[in-house]
Length: 129
Picture 1: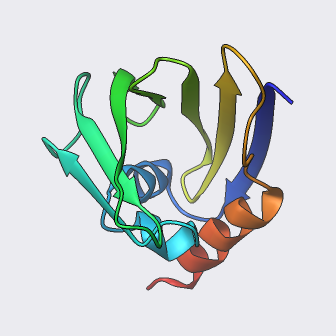
Picture 2 (picture 1 turned 180 degrees about the vertical axis):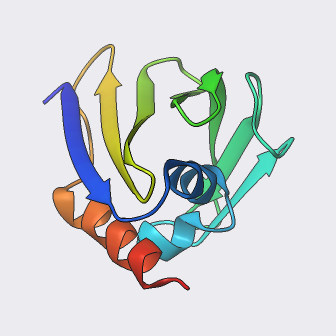
């Protein structure tokens, strides 16, 4: 598989979904394979570097290559082969849809996201006060 597209509807305002998913302090709450993530600078903009790590001590680096607040957020790895794009759409004042699209230019996706990851995001966000 070279491309993976998933969608989720979250019962939270669009702005909250965007803020939560772009904040590196929240990443480990909904992506179980990530223990820690940092961004420099934060809040993000084109050129911001996100780095994250799982159980190993090695960091993976990604750069923001597309950014439009409350609309789209795209990252690519340092090899410019792996990309991930988050797209956001307002459904109502209290409901938003997020599309997660990841792809590689060459080869195959190594560990594509599953709907379970986005379901975890939905549950965490909807259970927040």
